[in-house]
Amino acid sequence: MIVDDHAAFRQVVLMGLKTLEAESTECADGQEAVAQYPQFRPEIVLMDIAMKGLDGLDATAQIKARFPDAQIFILTQHDDPGLREAALQAGACRYLLKDDLSQLWALLRSPPPVPEAGS
Image (cartoon, rainbow, N blue to C red; front, side, top):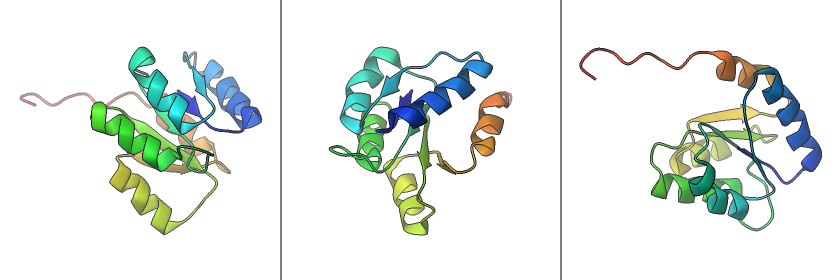
């Protein structure tokens, strides 16, 4: 799920996801993401922070409150330690910057960790 209020940026991310042969859905704001998450149950949510209405931090907290296993990556232009900490407090598992998507593509290409025996 791609959550960003800029349609052009969502298209850039969609094109990258297509190269990974990943299915995706788009949301233009946090409220839409909170409403659509239960229906789609995406493996990963790519969430912007600065959006009108319900921002990405509040949307992340709301999704995580209902779905603790949700994997939410904050994808933002704000390289700010305070926002990074707030994102982690809201339940995000990653904080990535939009100006370098190579880190995002590397994360999405890596296989999920194999559970250890007994866990």
